[in-house]
Length: 271
Image (cartoon, rainbow, N blue to C red; front, side, top):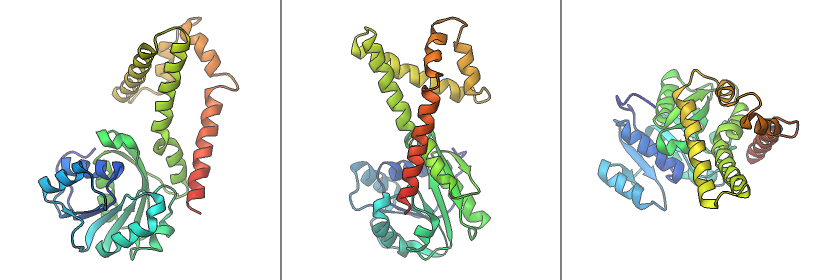
């Protein structure tokens, strides 16, 4: 996240569902200094309250902004860009978080040359997200810095030099939280099958995943394989379980297939 000194620039947010609202709350926490416009045809009560409290214009008149953030669903590209276009001026940078939609797709709908394609993830809702981003060649250093600040308000940002890598980012971190949640589900189900009461197994699995993630967060210098080795005593219970997970048909191959499937789907969405 940014350091709280304020986000300098005017912004229009088009789409304020879960991810858009998370971004808006992050900008609020970072004290965005310019005017903020929000376009959302079905505003939640939380969005209405936030706009009223901080003076953000909700579904109001349009005017060019320094940045326009497109946060609608990919299938709403047409209507989202129609709503965004009046906020786009000659110096506007458009930041799109539409999964699978390329910079060329956005450029075909809005009068902008400076376009950033980004893929954040749902932990942005608690300020612990991470986004991959790619900028068009016409994006200036100042415009890229503004896009970076807007994304960094809810987590980390990693910039890539090849737009096609955004599909891989989507497959790893964009969809990745769902993989972790499903792992917690499966671990709980396995615990229940081993004889634990289902509710207890669910609590054990959930807090274990939470704690392991927090441990990685607090020890960024320690790679995951080293953290894994610290838990694994030779010949012990963890080693026995890891023999199964590390088998030829185990977790590594399964994750490769899952990420490949997600990347293929992201590529299909752009077609």
